[in-house]
Image (cartoon, rainbow, N blue to C red; front, side, top):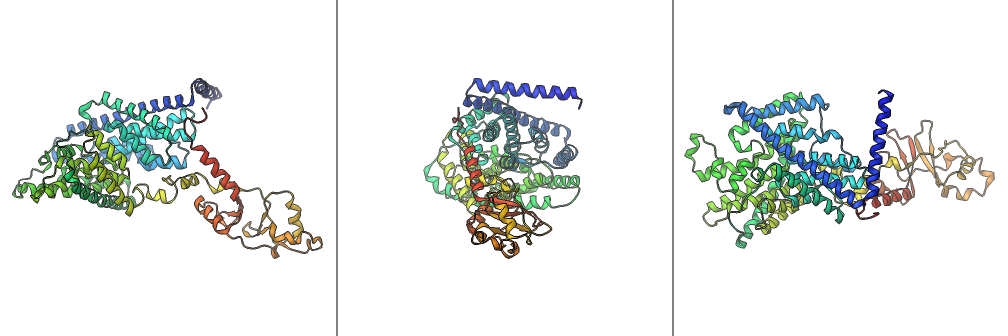
Amino acid sequence: MHPWFQGLKRKIIRGYHNGVHFLRTRISKVQYIIITATLTGLVSGMMAVLLKRSVQQVERLVQHFSGKEYLFLLCPAAGLLLTTWIIQRFFRGHIDKGIAMVLKAIAGKSSFIPVRNNYIHFITSALTVGSGGSAGLESPIVATGSSLGSTMGKLGLLSYSERTLMIACGAAAGIAAVYSAPIAGVMFAVEVLLAETVVSYFVPLIIAAVVGVLCSKIYLGESNLFNFALKSDFNYRNVPMYALLGIGAGFLSLYYAKAFRGVDRNLHHWKVNPYTKALTGGLILAGFFLLFAPLYGEGYESVKMLANDTAIRILPGAAWLRQIPQNVLLILFTGFILLLKPITAAVTIGSGGNGGNFAPSVFVGAYWGFFFSRVCNATGWLHLPEGNFTLVGMAGLLSGVMYCPLTAIFLIAEITNGYGLIIPLMIVATIAYFIAKTFEPFYMETKQLALSGEIFTHRREQNILSRMSLGSLTERTQQVFDPADSLNDLIRHIAQVDIPVFAVVDAGHRLLGVVTFNDIRGRIFNPEAHGKTLLKDLLRESPATLPIDTPMTKVINEFDRTQVDYLPVIDEDRRFVGFVSKSRLFERYRLQVAQVKDIYEDQ
């Protein structure tokens, strides 16, 4: 770059930093956070609205160019191929998708999300879902909103905890805009993204979510929002049946996770050309859609039919099916669909598309609620409100699949424009969550990341340790000794260091053992023997050695097990790197704890 441009760039950056500093000195910290949260809610809400509009435009384009039904079935393959081409051509063949990407950035990248995530999920998910891919837009919206929140935090020169809050604000605004459900947006951010929540975080989260909803209402209008009107009131006599619905939702959530992971894993490990994989996935989807049309796209239109007592409209029109009693056909058809949706979602995402499991889990929940109530009513012994059970089933599967019961409860309460079903929503969502959590402690998309410590969980101590690395805590300045060195050589060095343990290495710098101050304490006052005593006669094996990539939770466990103050650190070839101190580790831990603060502090 020409020196003139470099100088101009430095001046612009310096001027921007001075402007931010001027603003921050003129208003309080809380006011600055609120302004940033408002702007984050605005840009995230607008992006969510634009994504919904873009998907609608892609769907209209698909319908325009595919007048024949069989040509229409090939559109998902075309969308997957185009998505794959964009990822291969412009993003080196890979993008991090969905909620897992956000959680990894919070835990491992100091809440810095690459700027490309501001638009890549927008483009790829619009093509995937708009062309008929059987996935949801909510995870891409969360990824986009979170990325925009990270960008706003970076531009605002915010700290790590404040950037994390802006990421949550972006996600809350996106979810709130999609469903016109601000409370659900806030709950989602708290349950899924924020492993550690301070009470004052709710103020900027609520503001961002409200701004997101306003964007949706202004630009999408009420007719384009996903909402329902209750057909019947809650009847407490149906509580036992709602409990059974919740139990079924919990086990169905486990099936959903297992089916999705199995198909997705097989596609991921299928080593073929990415375009071949995308085409194959698209053709598989075409086969499913030919037999079960409601699996096409997000499927929200068929969900509305179930909830509004017009379920008969989802049935296929094949003449031979008319020989089957309509009620039997409807039960069989909805049963197959709720079992197949996790598979089609996995095929869509695993073969190269971009989408999430939020909408598919809502879809499966709706079909489960309808299936359950229709089967019960078919016995003639019960008369359950199928619309209500359809809505409550949505909360059950969302809670059990995504591990966000509060989000599920408030989402359905808000899209039904009231809290008439709040009691059954609580019953079903909590039962489903309890069952799913009992058999599978982690959300399916983040299980491996959680077990490896790459993302935060709701275990605060483990989260703090995940932000620390053994390499940054290792003291690397110690002098090392040869086994042939004498005790005299070691004693001359003792006065220059504070560490009471010394490493003895071979010619290849591999650790042979250690000598501690306690080992030589009795020999210090016998100077005649200093020159005759060799370190090879004094060294002993360290009670533990730590590879440089050892997780901090294991480091803590080793200190507890050995009851020593220093442990040696080695690299992959067993070469000595340095010592890690227990006191230094706990000092860093205290500093990390101090970073999670209320936004009202230090004003």
